[in-house]
Image (cartoon, rainbow, N blue to C red; front, side, top):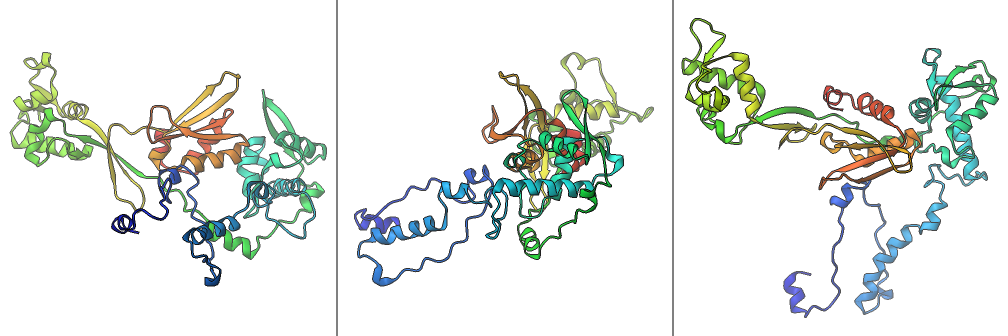
Length: 405
């Protein structure tokens, strides 16, 4: 009810304090999923109590019926990454073992070539096996009987399908593959079902498109006289090319170009105040064009413009922060990889963490970045710089990313 109605009724009824709403900051920090689709609540008027309390409780009961309690959900195969099949009597571990072998054989038969060898086992898992996982399923070695990739590959080596060697300390690589092995030659590539294709197409996320980033220069108070003739004031954000055009126009309009050497520009009082140091005021009278322009840009305040596809440009002051990747060592002598500033480039830290967790088969956490109010950082167990660079530069290709990572 409205405030007036509430006051008129003498504050009778039940009040609610809203703690969290769809698309708020808490939602943005999570997986950004949509609310569940629920059937309309059908109530029999004869069953309604005269008290409002019983009516108000009904929607809550309906929602609880539509969700599983935590113990029930943990036993649901779909939660663990496998589609439940009523006719399948195997345990979840046995199903994951089969999926693991299927992805392994599929990757060797269709993706890995002789020229790819030696191939890092981590790359084989992240770049080949995961991409061979059927739509709607999730490959998780920890849910299999092998628990670790190295143990599974040892078994495949004992079956003489592959040969694994430690080419550098602590790093294993596949050095040979027997493509004539019966298990590879007899393997039939599974065809995706129409249902899984429909589900995948309907739930597919939009591909990542890097933003267009332009460095800008803001007019400081000390340089307003230089830019006011061109219609700009303090705080105006300009591109480098615009600054150059304004300076050239100012010099020509005020006859500052040296007649004998057109590469030199005479400095009038305004230019002297804008770009010269105090000890240069009476000694420097001319400057080359390139020195004049570079000094102007150095004395302007840095800014940048970020434009995401289909969105309005966003102008921010200061220098753009690069994606920061740090390899740190914790007290337990274990290494962790920390990534910051993903949001600047339109990358969701939670999505990046989920992808890295699958590829690296390592635990990931998303926490607030120290010293920042609204930025998150991703922490991955172990040295995952290689996987990170492959993800950022390989699947988020852009000159900006290459220049700033």
